[in-house]
Length: 356
Ligand code: SF4
Image (cartoon, rainbow, N blue to C red):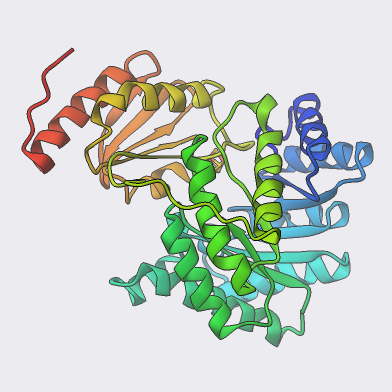
């Protein structure tokens, strides 16, 4: 997936080249606005790559995007934002019409951080079931419209939940192709290990048709996602399975999004790396810290973490669970995070942290 702002045509064209050169078969681009669509048209003319475009919260962009791409990804959890007077099936029909008229595929992309609130309410104690039911119901919507050219993804930042959700879905709908990925896997090497474990459990069981490796790395290193993905696939094909390192994720777990065109400040990747370095002292404590790049997915995707950071243009928002702590400048945030982390270690583990 391209990590740069789509309207920055030079930078996004460079991302496409980097990903293609690394061997990507499909390149995903996020489109949020009509300006992004104009940029997409130019990018389309300059590249023969297979494009999958993410329309996130703006389903109305589907007919503008579909003539220029091979696949549209919509997130069922983001369909309720616009046109509240229309039903979800009506909005899905609108997307399907655009895809059908342009011979374009669809991905129903369900994400644990943005599950449709109706499904969350129906399964308050089983968030995985909320994801799976939502995906199955959307498949039925497409089936009832006679649209067959679609696949599904069920992503989560916890690789164990990715395995479980995809197994449950595949048991119900073995006929529907699955796109696999551990979202917000974070930085290498942990992000690579999480992804590898999920793929090693699913692909040999016949589950999964396309893959995404999502790593928090600088824009120029995005090709690493493709290299890692191909090497995992090769290992699986050759029967080489890696064991999970002892105590993996039993202590501190840092989740970080891979960044995309919605990143609000280019300092995001540096911040994620600084968070990891600063928190090394706490590695034995079972605490999850999430670092997200934007306001679209940041607030929701940090809800399940003990401490969450999501980036705005000039400030980083800090949360403790679902509660907001405040917004801090990029210069202040690490000290504030340290303060909250020390308090949390004391609350959860009864351990007093002695300042350096
Ligand atoms: S959290 Fe925001 S910036 Fe990060 S990958 Fe998701 S949409 Fe993109």
